[in-house]
Amino acid sequence: MISNVIGTTGASMLLIRPYIKMNRNRIKPYHIIFFIFIVSNVGGALTPIGDPPLFLGFLSGVPFFWVIKNVWYIWLPALLLILFAFYLFDLNNKKDTSKGIEYSGKIQFKGYKNLIYLAVIIISVFIDPVIFSWVPNLSPLPFGIREIIMFAVVFLSYKTADKEILKDNEFDFEPIKEVAYLFIGIFATMIPALQLIAYEARTIGDKLNAGVFYWATGSLSAILDNTPTYMNFLSAAMGKYGLDVAVKTHVQQFVLVDDIYLKAISVAAVFFGSLTYIGNGPNFMVKSISERSGIEMPSFFTYIVKYSLIILVPIFTVIWLLFFYGKG
Image (cartoon, rainbow, N blue to C red; front, side, top):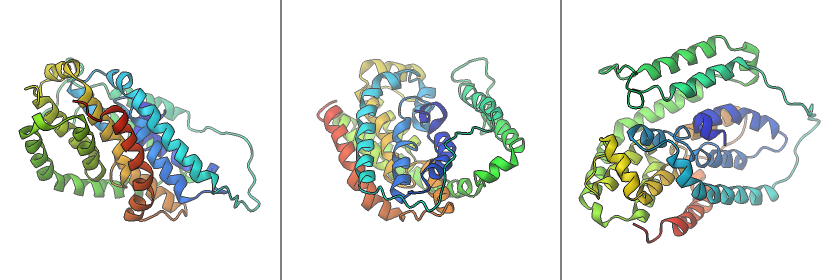
């Protein structure tokens, strides 16, 4: 639920260390993997704040509350099925390895001032000239007022943070750096591929149904960045009706005409990001933090073969059969 308020990245970074510490007497790699499935991906599908592709859709003209109204009944069974799979895994791995570890039984919350910073970050999400005409456009600069506010808050938060809390949370910038380097590489190399996909999708758009959009968007979101993948397939879906994704009124019209394509693209872009470590930014950060905490995480391909293929693909297939098969 928190992923829908502060984003999957925010929720992952906020919760992963407490999650590891609370389970330190029995923590296993699968605990972290299911955390990635739920908190870092599927959980954040209810609001535009939850995941970047949904936010970009909002900026393009998709109404803010459209997501929760049209996706919750897809989100809920997917989440329950993943939780049930987690229960089955956990049922057979209840060995308590605690050796003299004692818990205080108390919950402590430190750093209350950061709640103010967090509130400013969430509010600043909406400070965009696309949403409010009074917000100045800083073009041709590659950033706007929103980004200036966010970076200022990040700087203040770090500089005024309690050093003891940072130490207790084992905070450092290495996981963020690793993800930044990885995704810069992905962004630099995926543009031609996505341009080709967008062209081909528009060319044969009349032959594409909701199921095709679901699997195509999902598959590419798992290995490329889900935000441009979402926008490319949204553009292709709108092309079926002669609409342009760059025109906000066209996007609003598209939602009213037939939203089955938008549902398929939105759900797939968020859900399928959990299939690989590179499917979504927080996945790799959670892996890095967990390894720094001494947890031996599976390799890239082991994660796919041992976990995501046998757990997520069957669940996502059920979702396809229930909500998108034969539609559009």
